[in-house]
Image 1 (tube, one colour):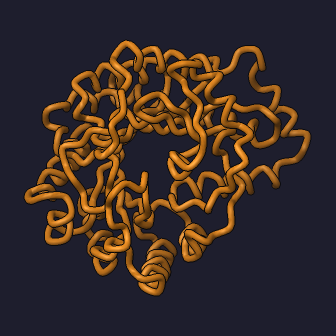
Image 2: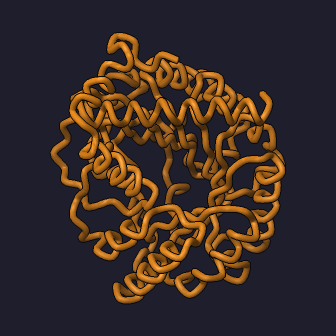
Length: 348
């Protein structure tokens, strides 16, 4: 598919996603419109703060993964973010990404960039590439491995050459809080935007997270600086208010959220959770055994209270759409709820 045609289709899908989110916000309807899919727990790197590769999960094989794509399409999923581990270690990743695109979904990949030269075919089917970056080379390489910064830079150039939007995902840890201005400079030089979130336990295996965390005062100072940078127009995802909220994390108050209503986290073994933060802290649904629809329905009434969100992109999505509808007249809300026949979810 030509890049121009793909952009047009992406804009249409984005508009449908926005309308669907407003409909979910204003009704009792539940659909997994946005899915974060850990396509594999395997990874070729061992980052200092990540324990995902320590999992031992029976991953969905190619046939099961493609069946999951069909299930998402039937449920009206509009956007899928493929994460890991490292998604590009899967030899079938191009086939899976192509199937998601063919199903009319916006598709992004969160990658460390090292395998992209071997899996360059994925770029034809993506709406966005997200690459992990911890800072300039002297910060990034000690966390991820010698030469890994250069590999991210190569992947960023490949993404730019393919005409795709690029996001650089930054985990805020004690190792990189002093490099925020340098990260902004890198993002501008690479034509990218930055996404930040604080380091925190993922699955709580044997990693020493206290060795990765800055002090509370250091994190608050960094978030204050990011808020100032965002207000000054730096290429940062998330509003200034998102960084103000994060000052209180992980004691931040829960926010109105699309988790388990319009968003879901799909683990490598087919378990379904409300979001990545609640993964393995709550009972998931089993999409492998139950099917995706039943698994998503089963997580609706989990009583576990959320500890507050730490992903600026998710924060922004929730804040925008939950606040936006308050300004929409009820007459217009009625039109939104009738915009698509209820018996045909996800109709293209």
